[in-house]
Picture 1 (cartoon, one colour):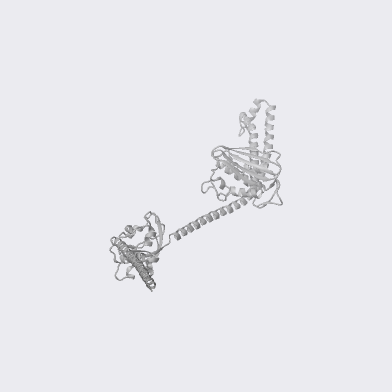
Picture 2: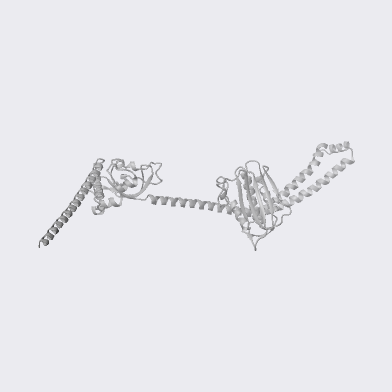
Length: 486
């Protein structure tokens, strides 16, 4: 019996101990929450006091009270009514009637980079970009926009570091939501990234339009050049006729002059000098004196010879021009690479003039090449003209041709200024040119590269600034199957 009573006493003591422990824990929890509530209240008071020191605007203080209490007490802002939802979802700013800022929520401060001290009580213009930083067509936050009611639009603002950001902004008078307050409220969303993407897209579209315009201009130029080529071929054909009878007539005149020179020289030999001089004096008129006559007889042979050479050169230019302007697809045939080079040099003579020395190292027994003479002439002429234009003053072009069982190898080297390292990898790209704007299409080397590839060959370049440039062309001796030049 005594044992039972002892056991009951022990259980009572344990129950009391558990109760005391539980009570202590509950008391500590209550103290913790009371302390937390106290600290939260102190934080609320401190944050509200800081804001109140910056402005005495009633509506601004009300918005700040909603925001601070929701933040400190972990409340759902949407449960605090329409103003709470606006503060939670948008970047919010309010001003008085004069445009002085009276409130800015945390989202706006985070986006703008300003602090309360930098905004509250300051004019809204503190947030405006400088005129030279303002993008074309951009607007700024101005309460005057809401004088006639609700306003919506995109505005450009400035951060303290000078960078700009964009907002899709709604602005309306506070009288729309409050009968007691006067001023304006802004709320908006950040669209900075969207504007940046749109700007990039707009720039990309502008770049594409510019390239399309360039291509269109080049295509128009190509059409004009194609028409000019056809016209040139026709003109060259028409010029051939008068050149032909000019050549025939000058040859006949050469025969006549040679015969008359023989008669005069024979007469000089058969009579004395005195009789010959009296003969000239008796005839009078336009017959020159003895000394001048001797000069004319000697000079006429030189003049006729130079005239014949000039006519032959004109005929060669016309022949080369007709061949070069031929724009129909050519079937590959056996051609002379040496003749192709000579024809191109003849057409490029106006660029070479007397300042460019051309050195040719071409074997006389060079075999025939399967290809298009007109297309290859275009490649060589392009290279000769480009080289001549690159050389300032006097210079030299060296042409070397070699051949083995499979390949023709052509090296065209110059002693010009060379090509910069950062541009040499781009010279075969369409529309790339190192010439000033308006002086080059950037298609010559690209087209030449394509022509060589159509012939089954390759085209490469080596250059060193200040020491010149070397173009190397390799062409196969034999084409596979039936080929033609496009």
